[in-house]
Figure 1 (cartoon, rainbow, N blue to C red):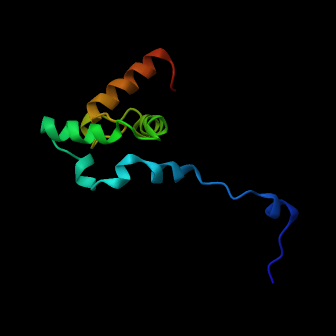
Figure 2: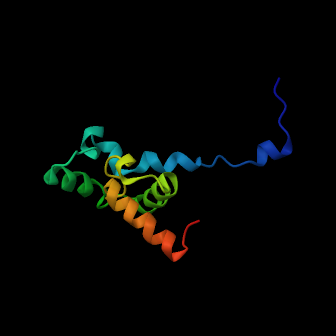
Length: 101
């Protein structure tokens, strides 16, 4: 028999922090779409997936924090409608403003 403490019973069934990823528009497309290479039309198609994504802002915040100061060549795919170099530029701008540590 499993005994529950009062605290365990009072804990709500809340989604985990990563649950937002399951709601991303990119989950409905093949992964190859979000890793378009260098062809401008393919990059535009990947960015279009993010256009009406319900978790866009959370995705952008998460990827900027996750990648941090990583060099642009080590940032892959389109995430939050930005390519690796574009995400690096956003990170640099936020860093200069003191918005991130």
